[in-house]
Image 1 (cartoon, one colour):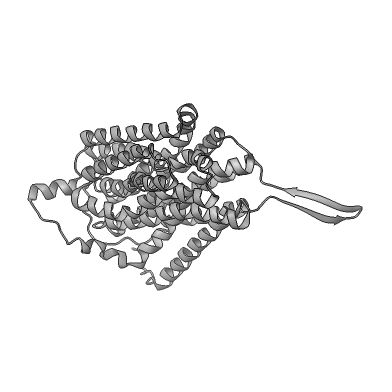
Image 2: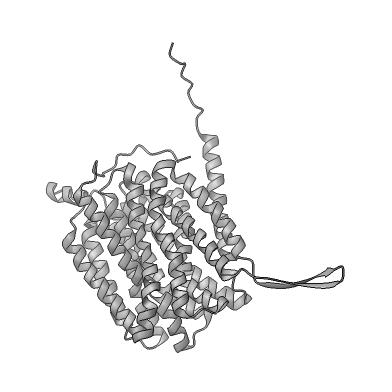
Length: 436
């Protein structure tokens, strides 16, 4: 059951063409590289933790710092994209993030690394730029699919987990930062020379029209409570995905004793389907409605996180012939399977949330998409820190999934009660007599 669509006209061009295909493909590749840089601490952070003797909480803050920057800048980058065009903003963002990643290689203290990590996080802000840029090339009926394909760039997290461990083991974590910075700088140059401005910017340039509204007016839709509800959904669907992408290598090493290369590859195995199937989530949202997709996302995620929340335990029962000892623990195979299912449905949910934005807010995709992306990204920042704090306070590894279960339960409840209220307020259908 999809939500009723607004009647506001959309500035999107009526049909995609070669420039739209090129914009989508290059934006997706660029976002893949950006996401690989954005999650770089999921691998090098483990080595840095050992070198500096960090606590779990300090480690959570370090890997979450780029996520903070990438989240907070999204709303501004989205608005700048609406006003200046995605081609310029995307290229500038990538170059700035590449410089910060290069400087990271020369950081020595924990404080210096935190500061460098803030700059690295600019790469994550590219998502809001890409959403606003790509959506302008496609009509409303195809935006879910287009933005789902663009979101496949999340697979960059898997690229980092596959490749970075081997670069790290061969040349050190500083080399990882230098190689990733070079890749991002090259991508920025390629993007600039292979794309063009979106249709809205081109029309604005040809007509010589001024900006359609003031900068403050761009924030007007943020007063709508529905925007914040979508943001909460994205806090779980995207924020928890990023948090787990960063946390899984540490979790697998601590719980199952894997080495860093194996943990990185398993983490990549989680990230790949969770990224690639985002495109499928966009297609499903176009076909059966974003609300239906979100219902499935939250229901399955609640079950998966509830099971993963169960801690390893030893307990004794009084049997007929005396005490009987039992041991319970989710084994590595079962854990990987459940995590993959969770990642798959998160990927569907990410696409479903963003299906709503260009439909409901066609003139404010940058601002609304930026806010939703910012809140989702903040989930990727806050959750790893919360995971570390919970580990320090409880000493239970699975406490991270307990927190995720509570989060998805709140999302599910808010959506369900909102849908019920909308259904009760909807006018009754008009019955038309059948033709004789």
